[in-house]
Length: 229
Image (cartoon, rainbow, N blue to C red; front, side):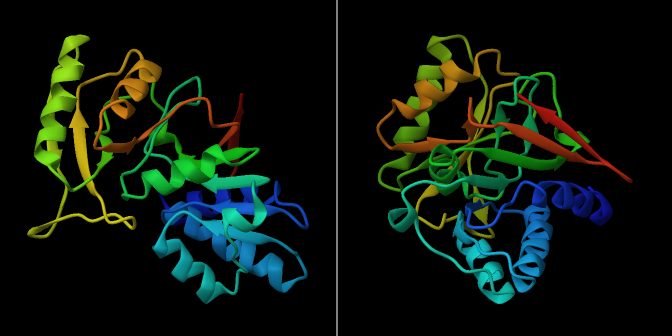
């Protein structure tokens, strides 16, 4: 996605931000453009509080002068703006390529509205070309990964699973957990897969975001395509 397309999507998303909102602030390069625009609006008198989905977003927000709070303080969010790795026609998502899926899902679940900003390459007819991230406890994680594959094979999904690395060491999420990336081909029943994965002890969350998205904004060269549920 070109920088221009990211800015186009971010400009469309900022139109949904109103004074005195509590905002969930997502993670990723497209959201970074939204944060820059949000900072500009705040300097011009917009009053909002943000709740971040990652330490990376926290650092950027603090640098831009965006006032931050916590879910504990505000209880729920008016709106969250975030990115996605894949988006299907029902606006179900695969997220977590950057590793923030657990915090992103907590924030999305506690938001009245979720807007996803992305480029058209993220639109797919079925989820599953992009690997599905699964956040797991480091404790006996190898056995958790085996159990994930066993349970999926029981319902007809075969494939592979790999521990994500950052150089020579396992990738560590902001919550101190590991991520496994799952490849099982196209996912015909994302809701069933989401529920199955989250039923396995050791799995904290997975990157399937089902029935959470209200609007998708696709950045194009000169305009934004808006898809609403």
